[in-house]
Length: 241
Image (cartoon, rainbow, N blue to C red; front, side):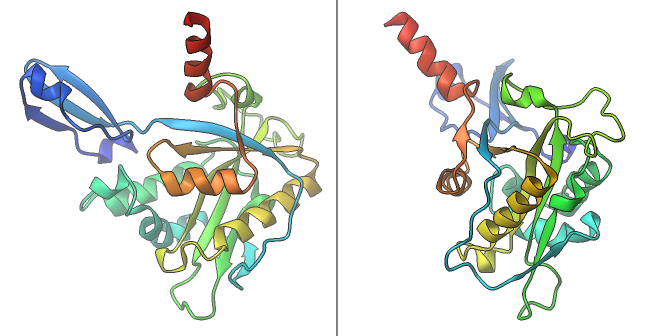
């Protein structure tokens, strides 16, 4: 999907480059007298047990299984347009959205755990789902190794054999219902389904610059995995102090 994001080049001196404000959604390089900015969000990995819970004061949306991942493109786009690097996309925004969902549906993010994928419906919104949670099966290495989790060749029956670790690949809600508990209600449904399937853990990933997502994960019981950059930095500091 990264081909949709523009590469930004600015003619700057090295002194000006070092004074540029940084956004964690981008990679900053200095090449031949130019600042080169590429969309490469820094992410943290986290995990929580699949012990289910009952959401408190959640918006009364109806939760149903996801029937068509590709059919969620408009809802996905509406939810992501306000976060970097998606916010920088122009006419390519819809094409990028389609690529993201196509990758999930085709198994590019790991086998889809269909019984744990849910959409939220609201009778006051006639444009389809107001949110969704998409769960795929990551390689179990996601729990112990940096930048791991992708399968080289996932068995076709990986979900049925309870291999790997479920991963909350995407969870999104229409901005008009943000902070109303819809995402938390979707998470609760995901956890119930996964526990019923025999899975003990659910992993997730959030972008470093996405404060609302980080707080949502923290409030809902996720904890950072020990190989995330925050823990690695702390360990390095202890070794050198």
